Image (cartoon, rainbow, N blue to C red; front, top):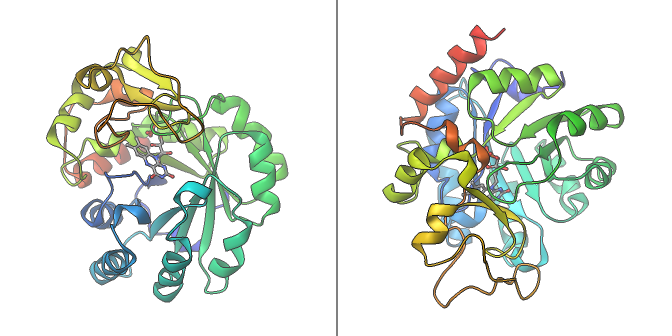
Length: 305
Ligand SMILES: Cc1cc2nc3c(=O)[nH]c(=O)nc-3n(C[C@H](O)[C@H](O)[C@H](O)COP(=O)(O)O)c2cc1C
C-alpha cells in the first residue's frame, strides 16, 4: 500500500470519485469529500478560468480539515489544452491537493504542482504509457482498464496491476467498472491503493447531467455498452440506447475523420447528447444521494474483508 499522507485518516473507503465531463460539479465534489471519498472534477466543466477559480473557492470554503481532499483533472492533449496555462496558475494559487492529468505527457506540469506540495496522478491505458508517466515523476498512476466509462482502455486489470507494481512504487489507482464496495476490496487485494469510480457516481442526486441520463443508467444493461471511436474520435464506451435515441445504429457507426474528429450528424455532440457509461452500468439500480452511495459501498467493503 502506498497511500500519500494527505489521504491518510480522511477516507471512509479507498475511493476517488472520478472526474467526468459535464457530470462532476461542485455539489458532487463537496458531498463526495464530506462522505469520505476523494471528490474530483475536470477543470473544463467550469466554462471559463474565472468560473474555475470560483468553483475552487466554493469547494475550499465548504471543506473542513477532517474531510477527504479534492482533485482536479486537466487534459494535456493538443486539442483541449487552450486553457491549460491559465488553469494551472489558478490551481497553483489555490494549492489544489490532487491534480489528475490525462492524454499527453505529465512531465511538463509535475514540477509546478510539486512546487506547492500538490500530487499528480496520471491516467494510463497501456504499460508503455505507465512506464513513461512513472519516469516523468508522477505520484500516482490511474490504470484505466477495459470496461471503464469514458475513454476506457482494453487491458485486463489482473494483467495490468501486477505488471505495474514492480517498476512503480507510487500510488496505484484502478479504474474500470468498479461500482460496489466488494469490487473496491478486490482492487485493493489485487495491489491497488485506491479504486477510481466514475459511472456509478453519475447516477447520484448531486451529479450534473439530465435526469434522462441517470434513468438510462438504471435501465441499461452491461451487454448494451458499445466501445467505439465513432463518437469522440477516440475509443470510448457509450450506451446503445443513447446512440439509438440520437438516430445512430450501434452496429453501423460512422468512422471518425481523424483522432478526436468524429463524423457525426450536425448538432450531435459526444458526452452532451450521446451518453457514456462503463460496463458497470448493469450494477446500477437507483439514484441515491452521494452520502448514501458511499455508506453502502463502505458497508460492502468492510463486510468483504
Ligand atoms: C461521462 C463520463 C465523462 C468522463 N469525462 C472524463 C474527463 O473529462 N476526464 C477524465 O480524465 N476522465 C473522464 N472520464 C473517465 C473517468 O474519469 C473514469 O476513468 C472512468 O469513469 C472510470 O470507469 P467507470 O466509469 O467504469 O467507473 C469520464 C467518464 C464518463 C463516464
